[in-house]
Length: 193
Image 1 (cartoon, rainbow, N blue to C red):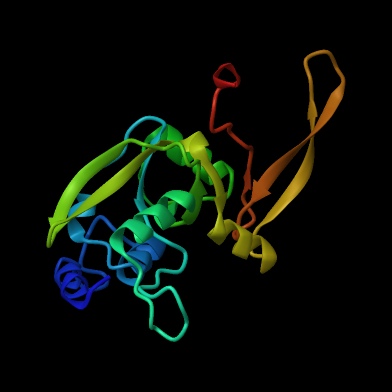
Image 2: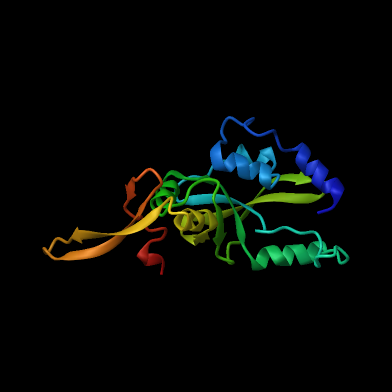
């Protein structure tokens, strides 16, 4: 990202804690990735989530020495090949599904490459700022969840469930950092398969 565009983007980002509808992890990610305030002017509904696309590691140069600059088309191709982003908003159903599976607003997630719906929310020096529109089931992984599991701040534990016919089945549930058990909710309908 060139210096002028980076400066213009920073001018559209309020200081930490300044947005009343953004807190915690999302507020930290907003500052980390220079996410413009205009991104927070829309809220997801139902089973949808809105994701601000980022690269896990965003570099302007192709090499470590800083001699070869990445073109805009290269950066665009890189974003398409590694679809990752920060969850900005989630509808009520999506939020239930995310929480029951150890994720939340502000998590850095990976999603399916076929996500093609975008909502334009701003333009900065000719660059469109978009939110990716996903169904919650299109999230395929969370870096924050993996970190919590590795640090033992969260766990996934087996649980026996009694079926209507009297037999039992083992299912797994997520246990958050406060010890609360969450029965998993599917991020998709079996009919979608």
